[in-house]
Length: 413
Image (cartoon, rainbow, N blue to C red; front, top):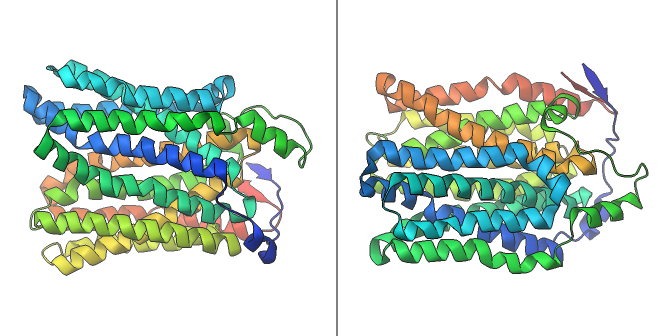
């Protein structure tokens, strides 16, 4: 058991209000984020469909998505070491290139192997880009308004999903795969033009060193971060939430009794609620306590999943998705801020990598487990069971809340 001491004094509200969130470098990073995620989501639903139409069937379609996720996780595991060795700008350029260039192979792809290979490489590029942009944004934001700034980041982060997923399918249906492939490559590569104006990691940390003595600290590894920097509990709480998020995206359109337009409306409602709640959670947490939001976030999201037991009611489905989205957005913001705030400057990339790893691990594990039981117990009960599984993380959230109330120390198991 390790004890970490840190200051927990409440920030001066007048100073909080004077700090600017949006600066020129931050706006450029948000542009890179928007381009990266647009590139990711435009093709996310198109590639499995393309693989199935090429003769690979449903198994091949699933393999394509799994390959994309596998590449992403590998990048997240390697990102802390790569950031230390090559820096932010180099990794962002590499991530954009790996995300945008391999997609061009799909223009002449006639076999599953090429599609899977392109997906693995694109996943690696996407993983690098998301981890690095998360770390850069955390470093550029004023500490007193970091929660609100990350809430804004969450809005930019989710807009490509709201717009890109349906746009990719619609454009493919009406104009063919070629146009979507071109737009996907352009969305990833065009923001690279902004990279020369971004501060690199050494620039940011050199500025911080004038205010915080101690010099450059060694990069914090993933396991070290989990064990000694208060990352484990927020990590586990977020995994529990993202498991349900993966289930919703994967299975709501397939649920028996839910019309396609209701499923689409539910997913849209979930995304919009998450965007709003992320921003609100950031503002509230900056002024009060981010750890205090973990229990409400879990509780609201869990109630939303339990409410899915009334799948035959369109009103209930939309309301449930609004509830789940609100809780999910609160959990997204609160866990990210807590993980970032507890790391030294040299470990912000690691915190971003851990948070993204929690996102992808839950997003993959949730649907996998749900798929094993839904055929036996049915969709309404399976959704409610997922809500109950989320509640298993409540004691962890409660312990985190208790740790936040103790001034001057964090106890990390």
